[in-house]
Image 1 (cartoon, rainbow, N blue to C red):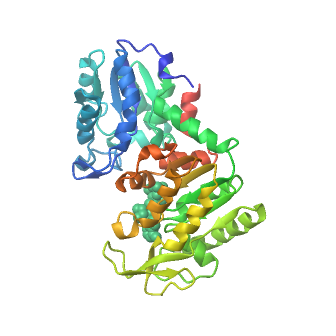
Image 2: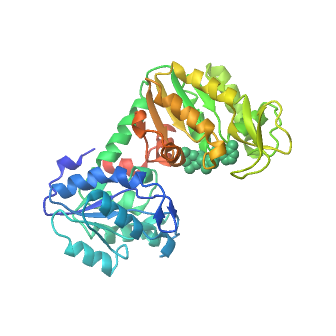
Image 3: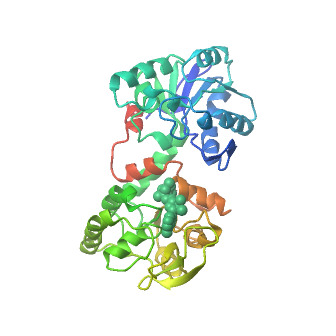
Length: 395
Ligand code: ADP
Ligand code: MG
């Protein structure tokens, strides 16, 4: 993959596909991690005299302008982080975008409105996507792919535009790929993976692939209950995907066959309801009351997991151990995060909510070897899939 240093950008308009898909509460950005991760590439290009046109998506507006998904607040935050004004185009490829691109001076930065306001961006129809990609490419002379969180999408700005313009991979994409390569090609052992989060169905592909690679698999979060149920435990009102039981039983057998240590919670915080102040108690996973739901792993499990992480030399962690958004149920996620921070292993956190949890809990990001900005993208990479946005940057 070409790097931005391989492009002659001075005085030229460079379209940068970034991942600025941040959580918003109204117009307030509640976690600006992805914006901060996008800054170095934008800054490097602007510093070399490029006219930088940033494009990105936010949320799922489904192909038409939707005010609550406007990138305008992101332009303001990006400007603060860059220490310079960021011009904002109120459309994606319309009059405002064209004018904004034309008016940019060397070293200046602009942001286009949400790519997903245009139906062509996500269209499954190649012709529709190409038509939109041509308009987007028409705004610039060069393309830089740096939106790692979107590289698993076959979208116009990710997949089609780099085929229309001379291109390079941005620093963020290169850094992410380097880390994922380290996890897939000859990781230092023991290689331990910790999985959590809400749904086991989101992670079937990655579990299946990882079983062939890891030494230990620790399962917490909402998805643990489908594993516990597959082993015959009653899980009360906990998150359970009954339609995945068969598949999960297959994973349990596969782990045993391959000699992968599969570790499930031994206790949980069983709550009376899904609420921040829900009454709760610690119960063993063999005795979850029918009228309770597990919202976090319990203290014995935290210790068990920490022990299984202690001698690891490579760790990949995806998915919170509990409903960390509620303070009372954030302890399991904190315990796993702290075990990683205290470890000498090569530690990688993948997943939007996992990364947000680290920051929300006030834990030092520098305590991990790498925090990925792309949840879905890093999982698909680990599944062994070809990612369209990386393939497009290859040639
Ligand atoms: P990531 O974005 O890191 O890949 P996921 O999106 O898979 O993670 O899952 C994150 C969500 O899982 C969080 O919102 C968290 O509240 C939820 N979750 C974790 N444990 C539980 C649980 N026991 N019950 C319900 N939801 C849970
Ligand atoms: Mg998530």
